[in-house]
Amino acid sequence: MILGSTKFPPATIKKLDKVQTTIPVSHVSSDWESNLLLLGELTGKSKEAKNIISDYQKDLKQAKKKP
Image (cartoon, rainbow, N blue to C red; front, top):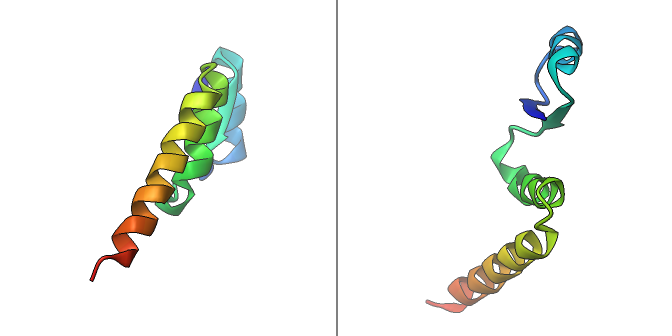
């Protein structure tokens, strides 16, 4: 499996697909949660990925409460 950028031109994806299945992943850092969930799914670690995101959201909420 090849993880490629969503910015890759279609021709590049086609070439990579000849080598191995290619999955476009967003390069935008604000989309990190979706990328982590995708990687968790691909590696059989969906639960761990969801837990990491949940822990992050809890920590962020706590940090926003502090003066």
